[in-house]
Image (cartoon, rainbow, N blue to C red):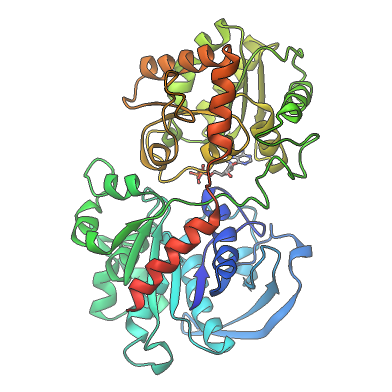
Length: 473
Ligand code: ADP
């Protein structure tokens, strides 16, 4: 099958979170299982020049807002699959990837240009795989195009929800500027008096998917549906949950280029060396027998930072280290900084985004904390499993699907999991993890169970192929 994957971000060209990891890896994985997949993503100012191999289309003249926008498309295979990067400087050469009032217009353009590009490339795709609200525009355009442009007649759309909380809302009055003027198009976007690109994607795509089974159920409830649960219930026969994979070319402790030592499930001596280097990097006293509790995240309420704030003192009281990498809301950044000032010999903090440090923390830490309020899939808990770093997670979304609570008697499970969103329940699991840490056999078993799980993209890609088949049949 010919599959065009569209995404607002994709590793290694751009990344702000899990979507980037997924969109970079999926087309490569689809090709590895025999499908003709390619990726289309914007070329940002942040996209490194070395990834732009050559110009694939010099004159991607796109009809836009009553005129023409002279875009280009670069070509690359830096992520392991053919990739076209849409170059539209006024939209994408900016200080950050997201965060502008006219983001909806930037991605409306990206969608429109991507469809124009696909047509220039030759054979029509069987599937256009759209990701999150940024790609809701293409779902509507294709639903419309299919009826009067024979090129698109047999193309079907799959729309994947990576995070329902971000919906790309804007004024309904803007729609006509992007060529959406029919009643069908207006109705697709209309949501509570404004236009929502997420709602449009959910309403008109041929098939829907999300990044874990549990999140697929959760999003159909008013508590987690962000006002769209009714639509998801209505379309639940078309909604599938497929857990993301881990790109082992990037996240593998045996080969990871960011690490000073390597290791695997059979020989963990390299992990001890990674721990030593991590403590040194944070200028912490090196005591390899004390556990390191780690967290890497966007600092937003979604990630359960307030639970971590509530238990940090108790963790420090046990003598453990805490290491935190992240940036985001000021109140949370301030908290970590204050904690570091309070216990400079136990706490390491890096405020900002640092890919290389993320790898070194995954390898050097002992316990990974992820007490999210909600978590569509979550990648860090899967990276942690692979790196022999035991996850302590809240049982929501993908965290519930990928982490199994440890049972010391039977020796099953790969982490620690609590359900109720409360500091006490979180702390109980932290203490259980500590207890296991000081029991060498139990810890070894936990690490083995996590490191030998097959969270590969190959598994996930096969499930997507099955979904695509169902979509075109
Ligand atoms: P989300 O997509 O909600 O941010 P995920 O767990 O699915 O959460 O994915 C987060 C990804 O972003 C992971 O690859 C994680 O390592 C990375 N990440 C998050 N914050 C940072 C940071 N400050 N520095 C480096 N990597 C980060």
